[in-house]
Structure formats: C-alpha cells, structure tokens
Length: 130
Image (cartoon, rainbow, N blue to C red; front, side):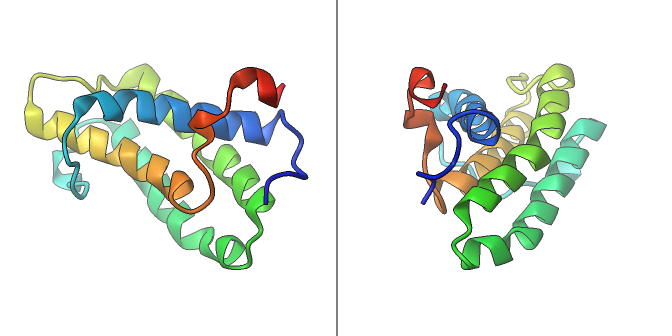
C-alpha cells in the first residue's frame, strides 16, 4: 500500500522512471526477451544491467515483507542516476535490431520489476502526485 507515501520525492521519481522506460519500449510493439550482455557496447549498458541485477536480488526482502514504500524509495534511489546516465549516453533506437531490442529488453526489465510487483505508476497523472 503506497497510500501513506508522500506524493513527491521517491514516488515521483519512481513514476518518472516507469514513464520513461515504458515510453520507449511500448511503441516497439515486440516481445522482448532476455538481455544478452554480449551485445553491450557501452559502459552505461553494463552498469545499468548490474544495478538491475543487484536491485532484483537485494530488494526481494522488502517486497516479500510487503514494504512497498521502502521498495519504492529504494527503486527510485537505485535507478535514478544510472538510468539518467544511460539515456544521456546510449542511443536506444539504433539500426542494429539485435542491439536495439537488447536495450529495450533491459528497459522493460527495469519497468516490469516495479510495475508487475507494486503498481504501474505511469498511470498516475503527474498533478495527483504533486
């Protein structure tokens, strides 16, 4: 339950992460498979994937304890910087389809990590959070 969480700060950051990732992978309209680390060509890809794997392992206890506010705070804190770096330095929609789909799969993995387990915050209207 996120109802006791302030509608700014970590919740807004989590909403932005969900929105940014879904805005880029949903229009692709393809079934995205597992991430292939052999296709990474940028440090930011490897870094973001490492952050993703570590969060996936480390955040399970919070999720299993139904501590959704703490999960949201950790999600926001964990992904904000690495995701910004990724978007600032990595071009997702490249001509090479394998690389493009691999990058989209990574972004979808981050998105689904939250949306499938807590809530799809992209459905919240920004004004309701502030």
